[in-house]
Length: 475
Ligand code: FUB
Image (cartoon, rainbow, N blue to C red; front, top):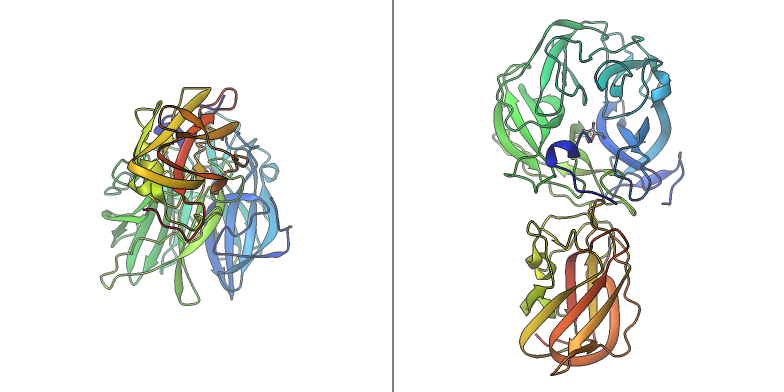
């Protein structure tokens, strides 16, 4: 059975295009594979996006990540998967967990790829570094062992998510960490050892993981995933950022630049390419996506005149499915249910929100964990409405709540609930509005009976009630 996990564990915790064929961005940069944890680099006229590769099975409850891919783009709109250019097998001392890395060009003109891996040694995650002669490699282990591990003095509680930054004077800095433990150090010119001691930067409010460092107009910027209740639902992360006048801080928190996304984890890469700025990040919006089957996407990032960043508008997150046309009678109904989990939101089902995926809790979600079997949602109106269709956007949290086995629409005939006549199949597809039609009924109450799959509970993000004809209004 899929299970809920606490927020602190969440982050530590097909198919259209083949490798080598260009994909159009705006939605995921590819739907051929699941990708996560982007890092971006500009070299010449090309934008390189380095990603992790999620290989968890559908319904999987853990990361399965064995290699990293490189995507290239001439325009930040079309992306070509150049394939898996680095793998756990490139590090003889590592065994699993190809998590979030970043590539930096060294003073020697070579490209250094810093990655967190399970180093098979004491503790869990270490940071290794590979090197190649071009942004596409081929890459080989540059050190033969971890650059950062639990035995590094003052290392992070979880040594993951390196971000590497080269200042104008040529000094290179490494930032990394998770479990609220941000760390930083200078790198030696050889790029494969640290110079001096590891510091704990100050002022990086609510840092959780996934730092991304860059500089603009003489100001240092550090974006990072935060998972506090001020910006994200329990178990989810947003991206906050801080600025400083020195690469090692102290930092001043500036706010949220990316709201929570449809995956629990969030991971920024911010870069200027051909005169435009971009936020590259991941979500769960690809078909069949989830918290362990993420997809990288990007959106434009805009600046205020005072050097602060405007919050990014997420345009590529749609997993498919626009609401069907017609007056949504649910908006004026009173919702009730046989059961809603105390931490979920019944009001989510008729607030008119358009979810980006079945994992999108942007406006909350109705869920009935840990009930199994049949539960119901009900709409009531003060006077009769004529209803001929419903459209249901199912909630699937990739944990205890799954898509249902089946559903049945009923209406109140004046003395009892009965099945609506002539009902079409009640769809149970993820990431879209499942439209069910029936012979129109005039009623003051409508009910959706939802039957769970064995071992799971069910949930709903939106349940629309519609007239039979799209143009009819019965408000
Ligand atoms: O992909 C595995 C981990 O999840 C990354 O290292 C974190 O940044 C989070 O995205």
